[in-house]
Length: 343
Image 1 (cartoon, rainbow, N blue to C red):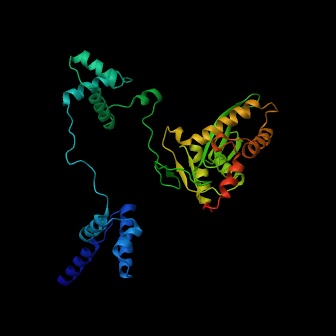
Image 2: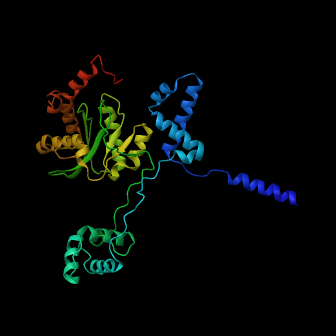
């Protein structure tokens, strides 16, 4: 009986040693680099060359090595950047309670007006930043709601979770080769005699090549169809795409990008400056095509004539951004350079 208890405790001991922690991507990358350095050293490579090949400094290597030896994978995780001394609230519970009642009474007022009302009501002057921090704290505790809840009947929008094929656009990303970070967007166009339609545009920031198509609605299914149109229009493969956070660029469109193995990057909210090329191309179509359109306003004819304008845009229209060449001429020019390493 006693032997069974010992065996049972041994099993529990072995089970307790299983590491079920979920480690970050950076942690596994560091472990992989340590293993590669070890392998290179075993093959006779010098430490200096091995570290240079993997882009790691000597101090970083020995720090990772020491922490991995002491703490295992947990030692390779990013250290907390939280300050040792955290800032404490500089207001009293009485001040917070007063702000709470003022904000409950004036639900559409922000920190500026609440600050003025506080001084008028209690004869005490406090800073707007303090009032703002108190209001933020009350919102997080669900004691009050943000202004837009009372205006539109909803709380703050939830941040998008990137758990599919789409990735968050990273600061500093820039297209270098044709087909990189192709900018895709859509615009609502009013056509006299027809009504409103959805105009889709894709443009290559490097060559200024553009693809134009028109649909009745801006759905993800139509966006996926437009992706195929883009692939057939551009004379080079599309290596990556950037879009805004619109719903038309999710679901079907995201799946189509995944199937075509095209990385999809989503821009931060309210940042049209990062999509400047496609915004400009939208404006060109609006003023040079739709504003001049005088034929029968039906979708079939619109598409037919928009296709002709698309050919004119890529093969005949001079573009200031590429030295008054056409996108076709500019692409041929950079593709013929001896130093070109695009393909």
